[in-house]
Amino acid sequence: MEVVLAIISVIMIISVFLSLVRKDFWIYKILEYPRLQKLILILIISCFWYFYWPITELINQLIFYGLLLSIIYLIYKILPYTSLSKKEMKKVIATDPENELKIFSANVFQDNDQYHKILQQVKETDPDLIFLLETNKAWETATRELNKKYPYNLLCPQENTYGLLFYSRLKLENAKINFVVKDDIPSIEAVVVLRSNKKIQLWGLHPEPPVPGESLYSTAKDKELMKTALKAKDRYMPCIVFGDLNDVAWSHTTVLFRKTSGLLDPRRGRGFYNTFSAHHWYIRFPLDYIFCSNEFGLISMKRMPKNGSDHFATIVNLALDTKLQNKQEPPHADKEELAEATKLASQPVKE
Image 1 (cartoon, one colour):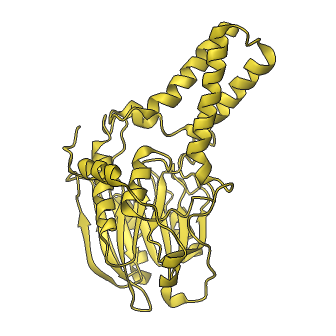
Image 2 (spheres, helix red, strand yellow):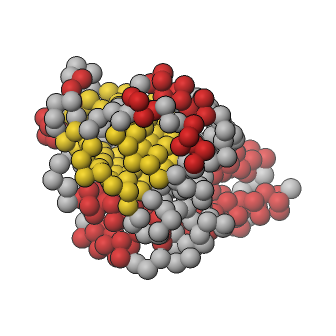
Image 3 (cartoon, one colour):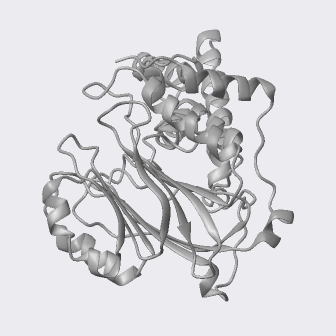
């Protein structure tokens, strides 16, 4: 048993620190996802070492200290997304409906035919904007009733799990569907006009994940995220980036995205808000996001109940208030990080 425990311990230690390798091959990226799960497992393994096996031999001591180092590193990475850390985005009270914006976002899972559950959640939350991902023609037909209440839209149903449907009851300007990296992976870009006539720049994304069967490399996802981050960095109006980013909050890429764009993450200091997988409680990661500039305050944020998809939907209510700019410090990228983001944004895409 001691040998088995040693082998498992070494495998766990390797899985933690192999994710530090800055390679775009899928295995290095995927190892960044289950950091909470790895932390729990390593804590259990460490307890076995401490209470049941003597840590007298040098090899066992090295393994045990490797486990402790892994615990420290994992806590450091995920702590900002717990209530033990400072909230990055301020909570505000809903007092000005004309400058408020409620966004419903959901990866519906293309083969999910429980359309009524998504429509019911939309009805219950009454959002201003609706962003549905992995939507095909069947989903477009099933959600057609939304056109009555949401007359402004960008619709790009596809059968490759990258279709999208975007509905808005607020006026849109310069609204368009982009194919930033690949000609079969769409995203949206639009200016949303609030009831107060103030304008917000919006980007909605669903980049390709680095997993076998999709792509063996993360270059497509990294490129799309960094190109959007650089646009957000040079914004001239309040902006929001949201969607299924197919990346975890504590990954190197998402951290670089935050710093480059200068956008706030309302999850920091509040919780993980894991959105995938809805089917397995023990394999859950935060993959669906909303980032916004520091002119916004958070009224509320909620993960919705199961709706037939493998993702949970989210509903986020924001308030635009330019006074918050002086109260909320946005993240910043240094020269090296900006250079890395620029490089990733211009890199050729690997298949």
